[in-house]
Length: 198
Image (cartoon, rainbow, N blue to C red; front, side):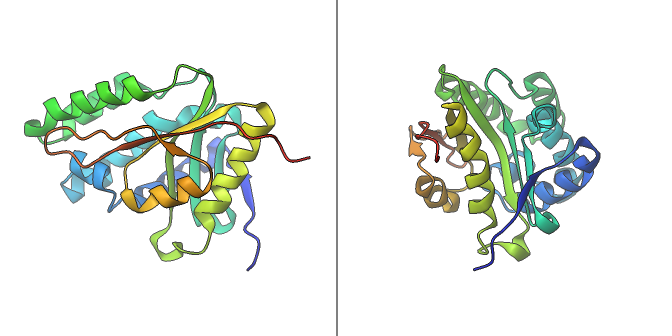
């Protein structure tokens, strides 16, 4: 199998990263529950991506594979998504009937978020035409090497049950599940740091 190169993306590449993640999340259960109308999803998802992960550019922790087959946005310890903007975007664009459940989801997510220093992965996605080629694993391996080098945990919430085995192969452990009202299941996962390879 050919090695997959991973590098940090610059802020100048944000529109390409956003387009890739928008495409990757087009069938994601949580993303499409929140934004079920396709036109609304396509219009609003790039703004949600910015609110969730734009701070990753400041720490060179937006990673892409060669040819933009996949991308991951990691937030360093102490850096959080722009919750106010996320809240505003969801309230303005989601079906009003699910808004109480969305609020409860964000509250539950906050309760699972670790208090120990950790890197947070709000977004990782692969071009649907390139899935199954090891791109997601290459992105995870690249970022987790940094976590291990720094001796810091990694945290994510899996919004798609199909991805849980991938995360488990990389050392993530399930902390629980979150399911509110009509929402799909969200699975918070934590990976303790491992000794860095020498």
